[in-house]
Image 1 (tube, one colour):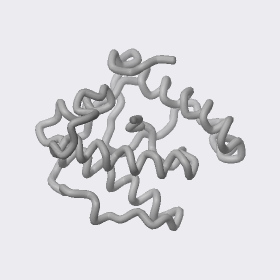
Image 2: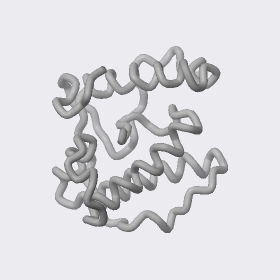
Image 3: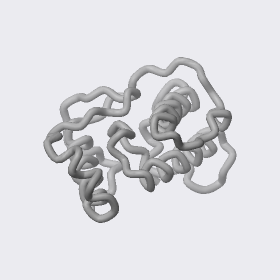
Image 4: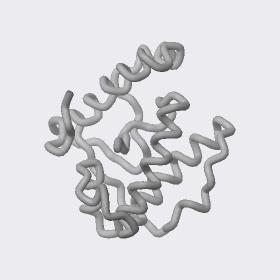
Length: 143
């Protein structure tokens, strides 16, 4: 499971579809509807919030917006909650790690998409997140 901090605009089609599915899985986990993945490290930053379900809903809504712009048919009804959620802080080191990781994936799966972003040194974040100084997060599985 990877819940990208990066804005979903950077993802290729395969990545965006995977993110939608993984976001829905995360929502099910946070809602107590699964036995697996409950301790997955990618969920920590959502679980730490006052209202994790509202935060994952905000996360999914942005993925849905991106999908609509690409004329994909993601079912918005699957997003369960819609209450307020404060922005989640994420470290500059984590964002830079994710950006490098995504560029490797794009180089393999969609080099043309990667070309559109070759001049981006610091990508935009998913609107749920705000950047703070810091290293790669301790929960990240660095390759």
